[in-house]
Length: 454
Image 1 (cartoon, rainbow, N blue to C red):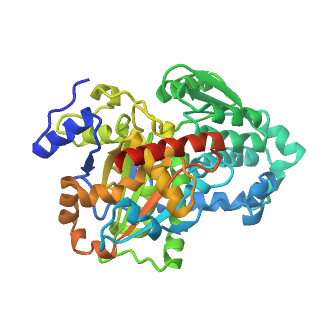
Image 2 (image 1 turned 120 degrees about the horizontal axis):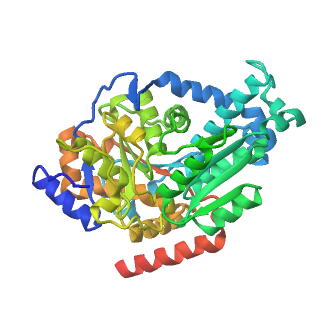
Image 3 (image 1 turned 180 degrees about the vertical axis):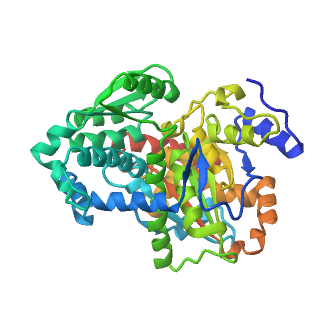
């Protein structure tokens, strides 16, 4: 396809940096301070009511989840992550005085799936299970969902298949929850998925189907196969409202956590959130929820690898005069090769992109070396173990304060005047289940990068 010509000097510099796989920052000119209460994407309208419905669904299943997942017994079946103050990390990230406080939303420690995908993935499987349970009379509205764990319940669910296409983390989430409930579980995985993730799924009794090519091909193959099976529910990461709303449920809990930490979100105290982005469903769901719950003074930025900035190229296409379409990173001469396997996506979700037009503040890109270096900085300062893709957001504050594009955004929003009172929140998305051998390899590479930069 033909890429639209840049409209001005800033656009031209952004285009050059993107094509050369150099870190870049784009701010969204279409962001609305007060978007409509209900937003439409792919012909469907969603609102905060839908997010609250997802929260309620997760609550209805909590006792069942506590029974089938021992790691959830202590929380009564609630899947949540802590909000961690990260002041100790700020000096190693090069922060100057007066740039605000840093927190980490630690989804890298989410139980069951070990990543942010536990949110949306769990919600979609539970929504499918709930529909079947009501259809087959396994539970009545308001009843005890632990009935699904009885032999009768498992026999009914066992007639059905749940399938998904994934580079790894979403497959881990869908596979774990579907198999635990008794579904036949199938995960279509791309060639760049990590072997340990495939092995872990197989250990849970999940059928893993490997495909040559990238994430997009794995999803397409899974979608096509599921279309021929009337008893198969395909979890479509590119088009699923259920996934997106499951992610959005995090906003309500975060609102409570911020209040407990004494964090105020208003014009004088903006909240700036940095979210790793693959196809876009998880960060878009969270951004939707945060904007609905916290209002115009929360600013969300997506973070992508320099070789896989699929969401950024989609947003550029959507904001270009006469452009649009559904571009791929390959159209920009990029490889889609990155060690951040969960972010190795060539083409963004149109659902997520359409929904983000009035909500998103911007997108920035980061090199793999930076991911590994910041993984080590997080370990040394806080003792937290994250995977490379989960480190993507830590470049965000420096992109805003240390680049021409970022400084322009701060001035244009007026945040430069209140930056010292801002809260920066990096959303870490995975790492809990990474085997020690692989994690030590990450650390070794990160320390080599830091040594070379010293």
